Image 1 (cartoon, rainbow, N blue to C red):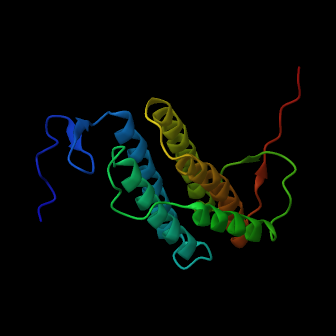
Image 2 (cartoon, helix red, strand yellow; image 1 turned 90 degrees about the vertical axis):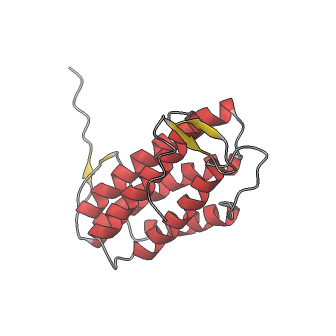
Image 3 (cartoon, rainbow, N blue to C red; image 1 turned 30 degrees about the horizontal axis):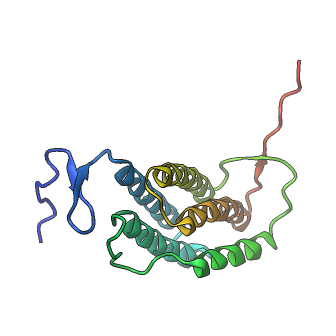
Length: 183
């Protein structure tokens, strides 16, 4: 199978089921951002192979592929794969709670950074938030499953806690943001 098809040379791409749309279509931008998030998680995995988070992040990468397939499928067409479901969100919540048990309680905002894996997780979190915003916009134009939006919302929470957890595992303290005094 050739990687290049030349079918996108005129600025269009195909949705699942064959419909052609411009490459800057909101649906394409949305699942493109989900793909960008997935690649950012790949960077975390490259920086921390075998870490406590590694198998969890690989699972999340698979979930993001499922979400991407859903977003690449026009309404009324059957999605070619299983969808993200309530159970996926429930697992995220359990793992958030598990990680938070070993973390010091948050008393202030923290600056993104610390260990390289933590900094990459913070970047992934911001990409996740952008994907969520784009999905909310797409939802206004063309209704999507509420669970897809909920999934991305919870995932951004997960990635925030995972960044703190990665710092904790590396023995790096989160850096609190100190608001400047009012003049």
